[in-house]
Image (cartoon, rainbow, N blue to C red; front, top):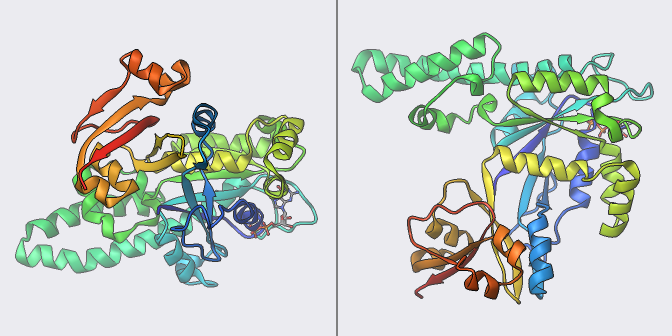
Length: 366
Ligand code: GDP
């Protein structure tokens, strides 16, 4: 499964957020395939479409799709030079698919800031610089090896790799993330195995106080982070980690009441889950019936047989066709019977590119 790593300076609220994640963790009984390690939290992806399908089908079982977060504690200034446990943390980030960067946007005199004051942009730049420096080392090491090969053998592949690496090196040396470099599909493939940290998609999480979260846009720190993130084409999600921790201990109805008291429609954690899902180009297809209503994750652009394979490899091997309709249609029409009457049931073949919100019945040979 894909995983988003939670990073940030010490004392910004990472552990508080990660506690909220682990307390909201899915029950292993429903998700037997989830491998749960101490620094990993597996949460359900909230999806109102599933809730609506449950109303229509009254299934025996309801299963949301899941998403995984990894706690990467202890990234500090100097990590790329091996300070603290620097290298180990950086290699933990290397194993993740996306980065959630927690930034402190709350004042609290009782909680020390490692840099002596609250300044979210400075904090962002410290962390980003560590990631950039680590990538620069990786790129330069690789260049040292591959440039010699390119020069002596005029090897085509080596030459192509050198050209991509040089572009990235230039950006990194100028203090910019690798993701800021425009690269085509082939170029991305060439450098894929290097797992560059600053090539991973990233979101910022602005952690603010209980008093301010109801009206986040009035928080001056948040405004700064938002402007900074927009300039980088990154998203920022406002949360109050402390509230998330309290919310994670409540039942659903209590939770909804608490949220509406605070003037928030959706919990910060739910927003973070959705944002992380989104930046990884993940989509959801649905299966619906009286036994089970269930959401499944797939990568944007996947065809029907591959999506069948998400459920079971036999479905993919023996794929015949997919009987498909859009969630939007059943939401309007109210039943599969009405979908058929209205001519909204589609028979899709091997080439069909599955869309987010498709409800799928796969037909396959065994
Ligand atoms: P980490 O070092 O980034 O993991 O930070 P922690 O999660 O341990 O948080 C550091 C301190 O800040 C703890 O005392 C938390 O209770 C406190 N804290 C975390 N989030 C919030 C918040 O949203 N508001 C306030 N006032 N304190 C917070």
